[in-house]
Image 1 (tube, helix red, strand yellow):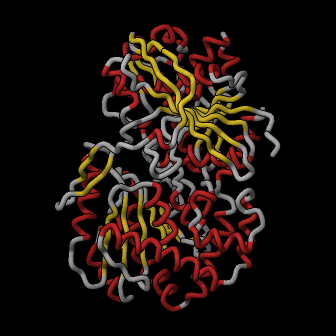
Image 2 (image 1 turned 120 degrees about the vertical axis):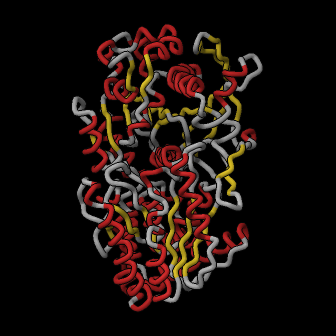
Image 3 (image 1 turned 90 degrees about the vertical axis):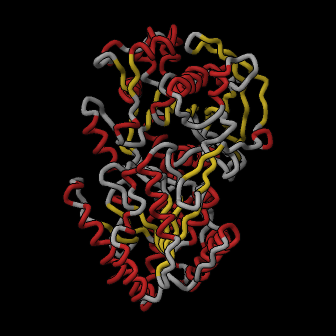
Length: 551
């Protein structure tokens, strides 16, 4: 395989690579993992950098009354990562922090390897406080969080050089968590004009709380000598917005969908912000039944997922067989782990997201009586939920409690299941095994959302509010259905979205599934041929190459 003539350091606080590697929290990490996998497939000279978390994010259990219970998610990182010879030190908050480096090799379809380096500060020579850097993803302690960000950004740039990766042309900061890399580059290169030739920045959310501000005092005490490299013109009321720093530092800044680009451009009108819509790594998220089907009909689909458009010629019956097997795999998992038996003949809705307010996990349960009547009318309805709430975040925890308590009601036609401890394995089973994928975030806060792309890859239509990627992937009645109008005034939309959800389920979706299955199978094929062929990380990474990496 020829290697593309550029080099990319891809820095991210989390990487979702495998279900049992507790190096991720949610969508940001999954996107990062999928990106390096496509880099390996395409022969991109990329190096991932992150932090090693020995206790993961958290392990989730649900109490008898529906409360989320968190515990450490300890994993055997030595079984997956290889130690390197590198041990290095960095001054953080006035303390010398020593860390060593572990490596994981991602191997592409043509044999190209992309390493991901994990920085481990859990060493006996460090203070108990600084050893916490390598304890959890997104710790509640803010001083540990900024220490993680300095280790990732400044330490990441230094470590790549120590590992022999010289003269890297691109430093891709996946969210602002790693933007202190720009300060190390400023120290090395001397001028911001030179830094701006190398930094690429992707922002993943318009949610205000995710755009971190640090006070001058906190930055000065944490950064030490690197504080002097911060641009003077970015201070606002004694603090600095890390997204501002990232946008200032980058040659290319982008949102992760066309809609998100519009929203972010309104938030930061002084910067030019591009749009590169997210994707998924098809080889990771395709279910076994559809992997087998694609391999029979689509030449080189693993290296060229755009070829999945050829699935338009696959016989409807084979689509039906593949989906039935994926559905059976999901239901077998539920019976094995939850001792709950679901009916494969009954239409099943899937929803799995982080349990935060704007994602509205229990939206479909707003009028439970209406939902029960619809279920009874069509001989049954099953809904499978999964997802974690941030610890001590009441709104997300209440979503879980509402759903869990609804699942305990003994109804004859409406069955609700909540799968605890959401992870890559559960996500893979759900996005392939349900009959339709539900996503109903508050518009316009959803930046992209990739779970619906995974569903499309496995022939599962979406029903979603028009936000994020779905604005681009949606063709009504062809690839799925919309909830509400294609506008960004949420005040006008909530009631219309709920009306559409119940109306389209009762009058369009369930009647088609029950009485016109041939038309349903045509939509399943469209999901693959139209959406999966486009919304993948190979296409996404090629856009980064053209717009940023190769210039």
